[in-house]
Image 1 (cartoon, rainbow, N blue to C red):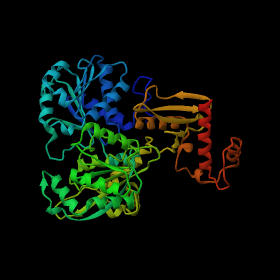
Image 2: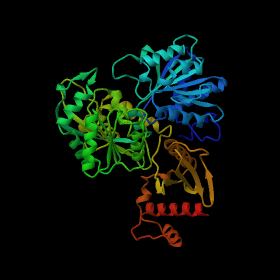
Image 3: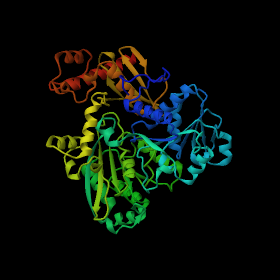
Image 4: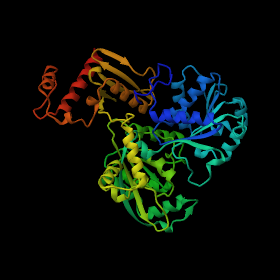
Length: 541
């Protein structure tokens, strides 16, 4: 969120300020529609706000056409729930209805529906075929026969049919099918490397682990390895044991997601973790929804440290606290790799880096995707650095790599548009707080399925979120408050003053408040103690 960005006429009760790149995406979408295009793609990396961007596009439509009907399509319950929550936050004065399984509100002005339910003819007739704008989430699924039939019913291919906006993290399919069968143009791209370089996603620390496997001998399925054949071959190399060893060596005690090639590999890996005393669980599509939800809830609540899966958490799964992604299944498909990597690059309090462990096998015929490759780097380039550090190092040595030069230009330009910034969050009960200088402190606490923000300044407590919001939005709002309070120095975790000795004034305050101090206490430690005490005292009063 960015305080320099003009308001987008979102109701005042919702403190949302779009990032500049989101405003650009909306402008490009509007320009494409005004130029006669009907079916456009907006591609944005996981965690950069595709849903909010689409909501902004919907908002522009409703401003011009207050009675316009909107249809939002997705293929999983999780994506439907996320979309409905966002749209209800954006449009409190519009009826947002869900059409999915036993939920049925087909007459709402804004309908959020699973493609599976909407493509049932009886349910489709209840919704009616007249929509002015259709949003397709995870558009790479739109070439399925179910989607094509539904789009045909919606008259999406007619010149006077609804406008379509397709959302995706990667505007390509792993099976090589042409998206042009449905879509006319990609109008905006905000890639994962660009988002990382500009600070909107966590930096990546790549770790390459070699495997004793000949990938040239593994059977192919389409353009990638056959999952079952790959899983069998990996198990023969003792991949489960190697995965646990790599975790203990490079990412011990971090909250982690492991991607396996097969269900057998996934389950075996979880078993080995548990035998090592590391609480882990495996999830896959064969288990009941209730069991899967219970495991995901335990992982969210930090009762499970490592979550292993096979092709289940690639899309629509958000757990920003994930610190490590272990890709224990080599792949040649860039879009699939990006989806897996994206499970760990979302920002969270005090999370600056996501460790990514890639398992690399021998091959002469295949081009494997790994995190350094995405940034125009070789694995040896990142032996001791994160990807952004490696790029800066290569730049200092001189490089003619075009991708690296473009990413450096991206980072340079970000200084003119206030890139995302890390904040120094302090644990506070089951939530977090960050100093906003003389304006007080922003306190973020869980509430229901979302997060609530207060600005606490002495005895004055100002609610910043009248309704709970998802955590990434809460973090963005907190950043906005800190910027507007001109308190970046107080909230910067890397500020030099934090390492200096505590000042006499700080020590007097600590003594007056009965807070223990020591002769070697830093200014940062003293500031944190004072901030926590001030917030706790203000809230008690």
